[in-house]
Amino acid sequence: MRMTDTIRLRLDVSYDGADFSGWAAQPARRTVAGVLIEAFARLIGAETPLGLTVAGRTDAGVHATGQVCHVELPVERWTELEGSLLRRLAALMPPDARVRAVTPVPDSFDARFSATFRRYEYRVVDRPWGPEPLRRHDTLGWMRPLDLDRLNAAAAGLLGEHDFAAFCKRKEHATTIRAINRLDWRRDPDGVCVATVQADAFCQAMVRSLVGAMLTVGDGRREPEWPAKLLTLRERSSEVTVAPAHGLTLVAVGYPEETEYAARADATRRLRA
Image (cartoon, rainbow, N blue to C red; front, top):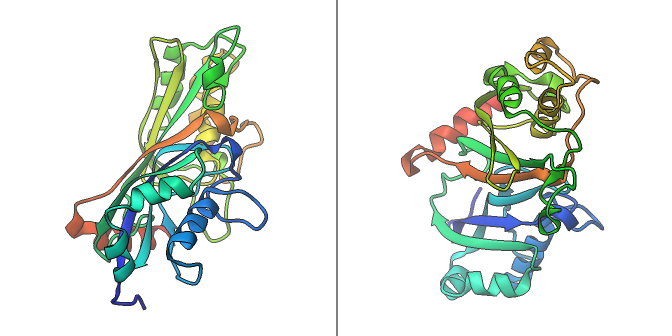
């Protein structure tokens, strides 16, 4: 049971995933959660449980500009740190991970289960000479020309609620049914193709598998209908290549109105079970 003398805080977090072994804390590995926990330990003591909960555990090499997590701090420590917590965390954390905002939230807020959507972007450039050197950590170089119309035709067939088992690393007793409400491609003025994908939640490696499948359509090796045909499968498809992690960024996590946090969390827990 949660202690009454603690306060729940929402943290908005950004990080360059290039040198992290993903989000989740792991022994002897550098992770985003690990450096965040270490920073808080230096501020409030390692013996204080944080209850760190994240909206989505990103894989090794994946970046974030819109990650959300929550922690619980003793009220007395929050009172002491409220005006300086962001600055103190910036001084204690490495330059490739930043807490951009700290917001008190009700006990009913759950960074993971209260979320209504996660939105990712995947950057890929099909120039013969590859990505700009300064963007090499977040942009995939693709050696074949990509056709935007073909990419969007493939994306259209994947919209909606489906069993995405063909594109997921299945976990025991977990569903692979997901609802994608946005999936589209654009080409920015600098020539970079950007896929935007938004869903209620994602299975492990799902976004990169979807991108990998669509890229083979965009470069002409597969027909636009092919990715959607894989939705009839009930196990991971060996034909789908997972796109490299470094092109992927978590850009936003959505939440309902404050009064709906608890109801959304309850509904999500039932669905995921």
